[in-house]
Image (cartoon, rainbow, N blue to C red):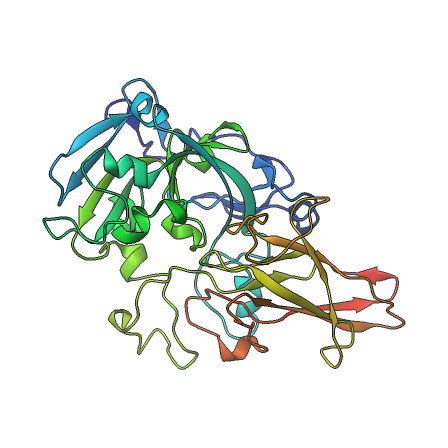
Length: 377
């Protein structure tokens, strides 16, 4: 790709906010403090979690930067930024979440592999860019297409980013073609975040945003797009980010028995967020101040002054829902929160029931021990 080079070391890392909790330095992985995460509905760029698999790529010449679209299509072509910006621009409010969010809590049950995330590997932003459905029309793929004439059924996104898991090759992931060509799925090629040009940490100059799906599929620093027959065979699709039962360990794992994880199940944080994958709304958030013996329903909201109604057109279907509940706590106790989404999916009660060797998708009830006069929230 002209104008782009990925550094072989970490000498050109961008500046970051000093309050970030650094979970790994090389590659850089960090999350904001819990208090900063829910201070606003839209997460400021500085406090949006940083998830990387290698050094941050550098784009030296934005004018020569292009994305090559090829594969099982009739009209392969290079698209430059001017081509993508010429398409209708959409702003989509969507929550991204690392599949490993709350991994440290799962490790307390049994040790798992992966970056040790607390509860803040999640953020809500307004992403601006062109819909992938419009982009694919430029290479002859109509909207709502499930397969091309040549048999293409999946859309693979390849990054400039190089990582050791791919033996020095590029990070890549894919989604079904029918999702990519569906305008209602709101899949974007985004060049803005919260009204500003993407910064390097978040994919400058162009990244994919796949709402309602684990963050691993929203590929940053986009290099090329391939229309392929089967789902992407890259490491992070086939040898990672898959959900296994607690009985599976590193000695008996068979990666081929599970499909790549896509939608994110319902997820809740006691200090104020709930999110579900697939564009599903949050029907209810229940909070208990006696360890789960009795429950009260929390109030839910997204934007101040606008009532939140699950699945209503006034609500942002790809974005998280903030919640709050007021209760008297007379003594030290355990506060518990759990959510139900619009498909009646309920969070599992115990982390032991969903423990898996990779430490992903910890959607168990969130429990916080509180002492009167002091909280570890």
